Length: 569
Image (cartoon, rainbow, N blue to C red; front, side, top):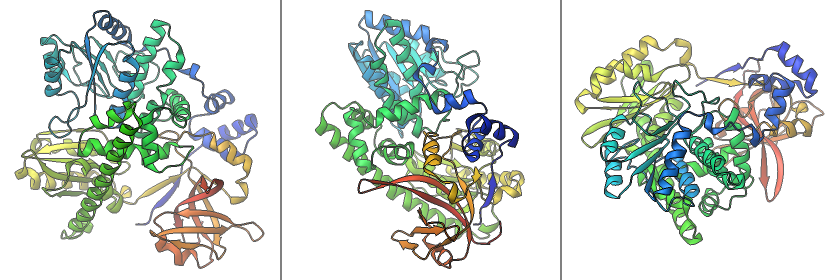
């Protein structure tokens, strides 16, 4: 499907003023303005993040009460349970608090709910586990902000709760000893977009300040925070950018045996970038939570024995390979089923049900459907006598609202603009499918049906100098709100040495001007475009810049994301 190219805006007057102050390539100033960096001082803070920029954790509502309650647990030698979700953010949060507080709490345990038996968040089974094991304090991380009933039940059983969450609260807050969530209406904490592990880090930071401890002990936790920020896809601005900047440095020299084993299994070279964490480390941690138990991931992150760590890393790697097979199988089946649907070309949504699809990879499969058909997609399967599903959307369409419009035929649903989950009975699947399609057809604007790819700036090959690249590297770490810049260029052509590679990839050797030297790059999954590239006729290209390491030697290359062979600018 042809993608529409749209350039992201940047006020020319603000770009010119910043260029006058910084004296760097105007394209770099354009990128900064697109990120909200409009002055010399803002640019200095952007390029030179400092740990001293981190906010005082006691500005977060609930922090004082949480520290006081933990102090009481230490004095009275209480048994404390760290409770976290089964994904990357939840497991790193649990690992962070356990590794930090094990030096102070003599009786410390952790709990990860079973994805299939208990579902997301604080469960009744988790509270029962705490009661049966003599727990008097539960610290919930990356979940709990909506656990009103579970917290009340725990209180009746004599168990206190501290909740460290980053999700939006509901209308009613749990009756906990302390709630640390900057998205609470009354919380005046200056930064609202921390990951769950980031909130856990703020609790550890508060304890460090209260006890007058050495900050080095605290900063040893930043490798886990970096993994969390990268994989939970939170914004890469403000405090997150500071934490990720220093966390990635820590991760690249981590002494945490479990992380070292995961990095080795990911087959990613040093220095690691955020993308290496997202596509290398993160999928292995998530896979074990999807297929077996997230508790295995926490064991790995806390491992102190190298042999145990490497055994667990192999286990996670194997689960990830299994997850990929499930993903591939479901995506292939889904495409065939949808294409076999009469009149599928006219449908505005993809809703597919098969009772033997693996529940743990439905979200990934739904994403595959949106990529292929550029339609809001929902993948459904059977689980415990009910039909459950995961939904993914396209840019500009609120899928949560679409699902909410079908609430009368659903048993449960939740999520946000781009992703959601739902539960219904099997007999209601056809009714839901019809209602959902009707809503999408009536509310999905026609222009949204054409895929759009947004680029940051136009950039000629001649402008990619060592100085340009040196500054551009300092824009990292990349993530939402600070994405790796995408550039557009016109008038490039093959110098005759581009090649098709195994796996349907392209190795590109391009020129832009007659006397200019060739610039080399890669285009993943674009092998079918080889004949058009090889014509040696000028075309347009969208690309990112990246450093490639081969046999110990680093070279700068482009990573092509799309081509336009129309020869029209």
